[in-house]
Image (cartoon, rainbow, N blue to C red; front, top):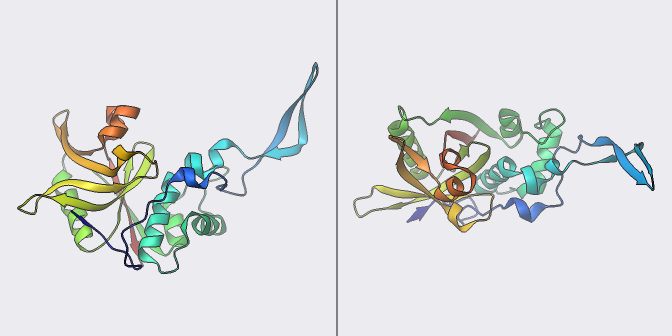
Length: 216
């Protein structure tokens, strides 16, 4: 077993979304109008505003958490989710009135190059070579499922040095999310997390993209 080591001399830290339940993403986004119920009367008070639940890091912060892991891994002054969110706000890295992140803008806000690469059955072997080379180079490997992000930070090897499974940091704090298997599903080799596939549906346990974040 081997994990990449950051500038602090430590392995990549866990950054769990639920640990930041008071952190609001995209401070520019509030909704105006609060429904008021006063006896038989119901009306919308336009003088009051509220923050939608999806704008809290604990609900929508998986991408930001992975960016935070990369920031802490590469940068001696990495500040974690609060500092990362502030940089995203300043750079305009949130998409319109939502917590959705503009990937390239967010990367530049933290001093990274960003490049997305799909993982398919046709390019599977070459993508695995890229992941293995990145780990050898001590680089974090951000990955994307359908609707969720995590990061590969190491691997477990057999006696011949072949990867048996990958070690993962997942913003969702579940024991089963710490490993990524190489499986054959529907006749295609793929990177698969059985816990995510069990809880969200088999196809959503398959990694379909690498979101490279590399220092400038």
